[in-house]
Amino acid sequence: MNELFELYEKAEIRIVTATVKSDTPKHKSRLVFATIRLLPKDVHQSYSTQVICGPDHTFYRKVVMPAKEAIQWYRTSNGTMIHTPHAESQFNKPDEVFEYDIQIADFTDETTWGEFGIPLNEKNMLDLHGDNPAPFLGYNSARIHRRFGAQNELLYLADEPKVIEFIKQGVFIDLNQYREYIGGMVLILPNPIVKSIENRLLQTKLDGQEQELRLLKLNTYPSQSCEKLKLVNFEIYLGILKNFRTINIPANGVVAIPHENAYQSHGYFLVHEEYGCLEFMPATSYLRQVSFNSELIDSRLSVKTYENNKHTSAPYEYESSLAHVQKETVIGTIKSDEIYNRVVEARYQRDLDKKRLSSGQFWFESDQRLFALEKIGQIISEARVSVEFFDPYFDALQITQFSLRVRVKGVKVVIVTSKLAFPKIEDAKEMQKQINNVNDRKIGLDISCIVLNQNKPVLHDRFLTIDGTIWFIGHSFNQIGVKNSFMTKVSDSSSIFPQLERIKNHSESIDIKRYVDSIKVENNEIILKNNQTNDKNFFIKVFNSFIETVRK
Image 1 (cartoon, rainbow, N blue to C red):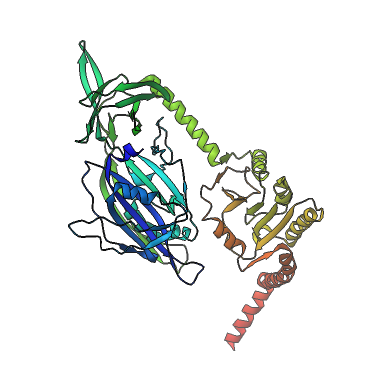
Image 2 (cartoon, one colour):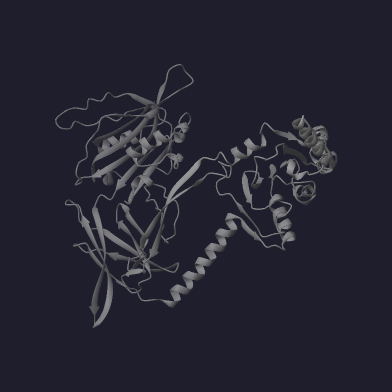
């Protein structure tokens, strides 16, 4: 390991700290995130910066120092104080930034010290998309070692957009998305021998026949050579690993590999006999053909309308345009492969089916009421904590159709409906009766009902929540499957739950018992108003009285 570190002369540390509130009266400093990038001997030297102050008492600085000192700083022992790194002199001036204590080191190494790994970026070895574990590397390949730190008193920074943007500009990572890195640091070891690798496709003739060659050119640093380097080549065709072999690299660094199939992708590992794997290239393909469509705008529209149908509605304006779609333009050529197209099309269909199942989306035809009852019932039966129905037309019948599908005792069932579900007082009483019947049996279910007591309920759409999952339903529970209906699982429910809670806790929301008790009085008032407004003789008497008054 020491021999490997000898290949690096300097290091560039990018560090973000923050002053956070602590339990003590004084504020204290904390490490938010840092990267320590070792610089090969022949790399153009970087430079240190002054401390840059960010929002919410955050600070950023880039420090250049000898590689050995940077490694020692990275390996600060737990339980000892970690200080701000001290930059070496530059432009014949010593570092004028005051050195201060950051925090007591409290880190957990991801792997044993000395085991350096290469992140598999958004495309892994088999050309499959996944998560990028090291976004701060950009498109570069390098080995890393990670130390994860304590996050107490720091996680609030991930929810501050200005702080996140400030950090991203300095250390090239979005800590709102990559929260696991908060409080930690990463050691980055770029390839210390090879500066770059050129990857080209060459058309040539061999024995009078045209052939394609992959041409790889390894450009080493001036003080290094290709000695002890090997290339582990592999190719992927329709998910099948092929031609996995080791190739010795000549002194000039040029490697030519036959490329027999235009549809296959290829990658490699660059390995050193002593230092291990220095670089990795995931399976990629050459770009051979590009097609695009262009549009020619024919006319522009300025549309003036209104936000809603009310007489007091505010105006609403927007710009639009109409265009002619031009003929598709194709640049480049590629020979069609019937087998490749067949496999890709079938794979694409399988992926769609998997996504459809995992995303949880169902279409019910107009005669699939029983299927809808079974499918929704199956979803409800998976509940372990709570089930909530949000539907302004949810009535007593749906209690037996859906609510009793719960299979785990102690699950709380909440129904959020509206007065629209109860055109008659008997309907509301039946709702209360069904709920009491279930709760009085003490079978382990706790059903409650909230009525949105408004003429125009604040709830329009229908939702079903199962523990931490939300389903959006395009039809009321009493009609889904009777007519064409669609339901789907909400991919990100974190922003929807607070809105549903707001509706449930609305000031005009009351439980079913209070609604039944109050509707009697309201019903009497409604009948009285109806008797007045529907009595033709009453209007005739009023009109005649008005005429007599005018005559007098």
